[in-house]
Every structure is written in C-alpha cells, then in structure tokens.
Length: 309
Image (cartoon, rainbow, N blue to C red; front, top):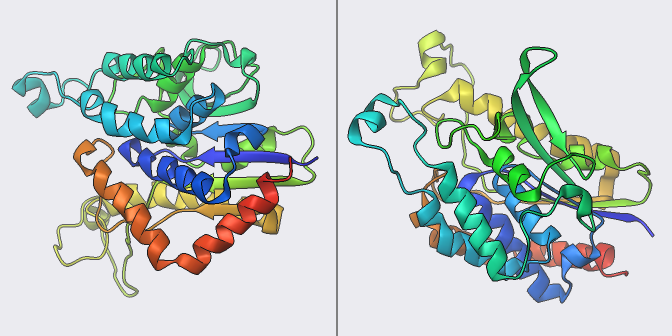
C-alpha cells in the first residue's frame, strides 16, 4: 500500500482556506482524509491544521477554530507608543497558546502530546534563531523524532516575526519553507507509490511589466499606485518564488500522484485580518462554483488516491 501525504502551507488566518477546502473535499468524497494519511505536514498556520488532524480533530472543527478563535488571537495588547514605534511584537504568544489549548481540549484532544507519540508521521518546519554550536540561525524540521510537544511545535512554527515574539528561540517556519510538501516527501524512508495532496492559502496577482528598469528604491517600496506589483516587491517576490519551488519539485518527482489546491484571492488579505475569514470561506465556495470541472477532477483524484484503504 502506498504512502499518503497531506501538506498545508503557512498564511495566518488564510489557513481557513485549506481547512475549508478539506471540509468540502470530505463532504463530496465521504472520506476522512486524515484517517487515510500516513504523513501530515504543515508550516505556521498549516502546522495547526496538521497538528489538529494528527490528534483526531475533524476538518469542520478546524474551520470553526478559525471562525471562533482568530479575533482573540490577533487582539493587540500594547499601548499606542509601543505600536507606533514597533518596540514589541503586535500580538501576544499567550493568546495563541490559550486558543490552541482551549480548542483542542474542547474536542477531547491533547495538544501537549509529544510528537513521538502521534500515530502518524508529522513534519513541521521552524527557524531556530541561535544554533548554539554554529552560532547562527538555521531552518529546522520537527518530526516524530524531535523531543518537543505538539503545541510547542505549532507555536514555534507560527511565531511570525513582527506579529508574535519568538517562541522558545524559534520563529515562523514560513521563513524557510512556507510550503512544506517537499520536506514531507523527503522525510519518507520509502518513496515509491506516494500520493501527495498539497493545500495553499491563496495568492494575489503580482507582476512587474517587461521593460521596467527599477532602481533600489522601487524594488524595496513601489510608490506607483497603478503598479501591478505589491508595495514591497523585492521581499514579496522572494517569498512568492520560494513558495513555488516545492510544488514544482513535487510535480516533477511525483507526476500524477501530486495534486495542489489553491486559489486566487479577490483582494490582498493580511495574516492577521480575522474579519476577512467569512470572505475567505466565500472565496472557496466561489472557486468551486466557477471551476467545477477542475474541482470534480480533484475530487475524483482524491477518491482514487485516498479511498483505497
């Protein structure tokens, strides 16, 4: 029997997109995908989805987590001077920790379980700010062999710089691998007959027209209100292009055994913009309605790959 992988990108509150896509897939196919999966991978908000599935939470419960808990997680608790000067992270790690603990325990799931005790394999990337041997920061991949609890692994991977303070000396895994799919594939001992379903958290159009010859300032911040590029094109491009490579690599390695689900957002949505969650859910509904043939093909692929057991 081949190995099955579910992989979830980072993206803050946009994590509701893959969670809702998963819910819709399960409604159509009648398959609880996590129950058929050998390995769960997630970065940042994706680590929360992967972790929740690993302890038995259902997709609709994860969607409800985003709907019910996001406002509290992203409630600013610093005074106006700290906020204006950027002296501290905008949000408290404790808010996220408490929300995770409450949501998991309400479903009789234990977020403090060690990764080594999980039934399935798990892959969660983060960035260690200080490797004590090398005295430098480094990307790390937490797996079932890592001596850490699930909630601490999720907190490490979700500690997005400027949004949250570092957690136990770690920051957001999205700094290294926002799409963890290729890490998940590489972590398998046997890589024959693998099916990998990867979920994105949405993207916006962003490009630089041919013939533009920008200097340093325009690359750092684009002040042209009519420009199709983002306001910070250099940094955005670095992260966007990095996000593309894992999927392209998986496609080359796995061919028809790889499938990615993602959508174009109707507008840019910040990692912390919790008020937009209902709109993101509607974006998923609209995507399915307007791309029905592609959606049906995806559901058929899921049934053929995950419905065999």
